Length: 223
Ligand code: FE
Picture 1 (cartoon, helix red, strand yellow):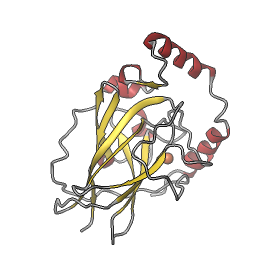
Picture 2 (cartoon, protein in one colour):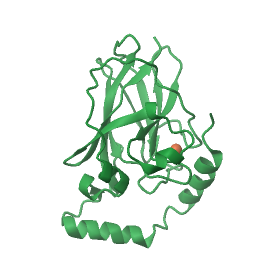
Picture 3 (cartoon, helix red, strand yellow):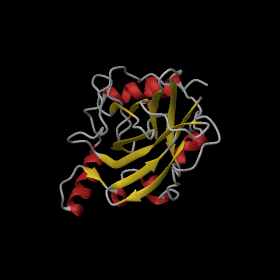
Picture 4 (cartoon, rainbow, N blue to C red):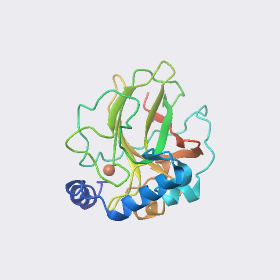
């Protein structure tokens, strides 16, 4: 199924074009948060998240990623905002970035539960305001799984934009295999049910932490 073109291309571009016109209410909210925290840090933690649906939900307890998979990770459209050549990095957070800090980690496995090392995971996502960086590589980056098939990326909870709930795009390139392109979602987000391509099989498992949120997801590739 195709990702809604009007949602990712039309709405996204509109937001991109107005990237410098951040709503006054956002500044007000950030100012209030900073005043309350007194720390002056641009990133918020879970209790002051800019995504109330997640804060209210809290998410289910993080499941152990030691469990073996029972099905392949479903593919999804890449949408219009993939950009080749992202930098190799495990943190997508940059100076001045706002939002709720998120550490997403997990493994790449085969259906036989074997870890797959040397898999390139290329992540890209919208910022907390629902805007993609299409001129540079903000909130884009790739890394490779280690000998145990593990990955970990530090980022922020992505914002919603017209037609789309919170999601993170990823391309999984396992050596000698076809590229798996898919998207990850967050439980407890009201907009999930309004997003035509939302798939509950692609929900990350989330818990709140002292610095934001921690999420886990294991990708399963064909043997
Ligand atoms: Fe998207």
